Amino acid sequence: MRHVDVLIIGGGPAGISAAIWCKRLGIDCLLLEEQSQLGGQLFNIFNEIVDYPGMRTKNGIEMQREMVKHFVEMDCLYEVNTKVLFIDERSKTVKVKKQAKKQEICYTYLILATGSSQRKLGVSGEQQMIDRGEVYSASADGERLKGKTVAIIGGGDRAFEGAHLLSSKAKEVYLIHRSTRFKAREQYVERVISNPGIKVMTDTEVTAIHGNRHVTSIDLESKNKEYKNLLVDAVLIRLGVAPNVDLIKGKVATAQNGLIVTDDVHQSSNPFIYAIGDACTTPLFSSISSSAGQGTIVAKHISSLLTES
Ligand SMILES: Cc1cc2nc3c(=O)[nH]c(=O)nc-3n(C[C@H](O)[C@H](O)[C@H](O)COP(=O)(O)OP(=O)(O)OC[C@H]3O[C@@H](n4cnc5c(N)ncnc54)[C@H](O)[C@@H]3O)c2cc1C
Image (cartoon, rainbow, N blue to C red):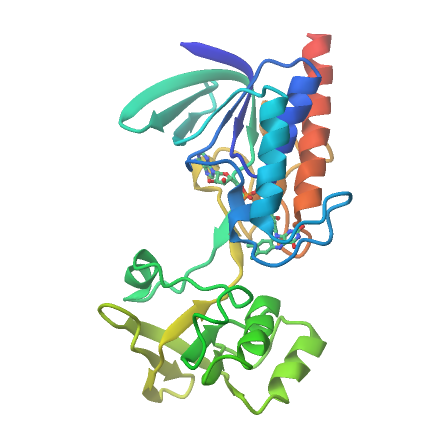
């Protein structure tokens, strides 16, 4: 069976950074990524990235290109299209699937850099909408949504920012939230509430999304049990993110919000398993730079352990 000293699961900014540092420190390391390309959430960033020191890019894809170029130039070992299906923490082995082939890899230390994913509504019609490619970015898809009726679901910054951005393009914008309290910043809320082009519906939940070839309407249910079908052309779900931790559930300590609990060197409750990036960072504090920084910490720490042993 193949053995590596450090196995990294996830090729987003956290995993890429950890792998670069492992390479630099001379550690035998392999990174596995289930998608066909490294980069993680960088592929979903359509806005300019202005907060990463020394690298200002016009979107996430440009940053992905730079990071992967650096990673490849460093000769880091990695495999894409490779999904980790199971972690056996007792035998320190993972089961992976690459296309149809399954294999096992043994590790001394495991780094979970599995990131986070957008939360879903969990209603009928939602997955079909996603599978049809009806997934929009408020900043990049203004032209695609021009003259359309758009529903944005959520009460956080991204929901409010999206509503504001689209109000100058779309025919109508509905911002629908299940409570009357918003997590969004006060200035975002004020900007939306005072915008006559945006209809804010509170205490209202979306219970279904309809449409065969494209979205045509959504079903709504209010807190006081009023039901309504609203004709819309597009739905943007902005419910925040959840850490990708299914793989490790029950094997290391996780907090109530699902995040992997780690100490200051990113070690989990299992001394051979570490977590970095969005898998262990509250969304309020998650960022490309903090993910990269955590990758550095964990690689340096593991290097010291490997040197001692
Ligand atoms: C729209 C948007 C805009 C953003 N804008 C900014 C910004 O301007 N500035 C900023 O600093 N941050 C921004 N962020 C946040 C930033 O992108 C994240 O904090 C960062 O990408 C987290 O990096 P990560 O490596 O922890 O996780 P991710 O980027 O989520 O990468 C995790 C990787 O792990 C892989 N993976 C998961 N499970 C498995 C498995 N079982 N097997 C193999 N691979 C697996 C995934 O496929 C993925 O590639 C933004 C995020 C979004 C969504």
